[in-house]
Image (cartoon, rainbow, N blue to C red; front, side):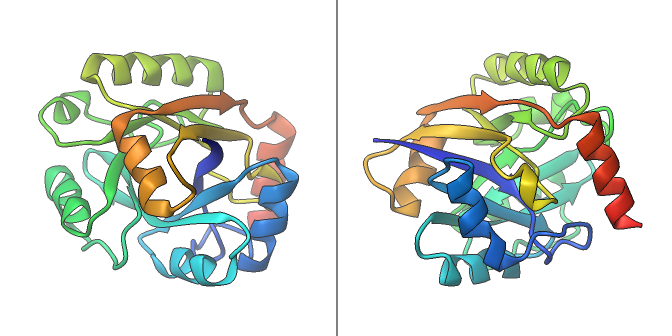
Length: 213
């Protein structure tokens, strides 16, 4: 079975997001998605609350973690990943909690620069090749796809949504045996994925900036 999952969404539990938990299911369904991963910055509470409240969709609890070598998505963890760890230690911590580690937006010009060499020796599970807010979208998607192929790692896509209207702008089609979170995450780890979607518009970028201020 194929499931459309946005693997990178932020809620109000991220300081820079405006998406309420109650908006997730209707926005997800309106975008034609089967589910999403909640990846708030250094915070798991939004993901756990969404998993409790949004029973009509698939919810993968997770976090986005900043390291000295780039941002990492921790998908399907039941407790928070420890902070202030190195890149490799962060990935180890995610695995110890039963989750998978996905490097986020590795080449976005608006995000911290990444250290590609660190990825080669790490135990990453996947590369986020499509991130709707990465700029420029087409170029960063091509570069991230090339990185995933170089590392022989699965590819994922996510909106990186901080506004409700952006949920599902980029997403991952996961070929899973069931809609159980554990099965979907395992399918991602095995690389049974397709990446789809587009980037956000300049107008939408401006809207986010205005809303933040």
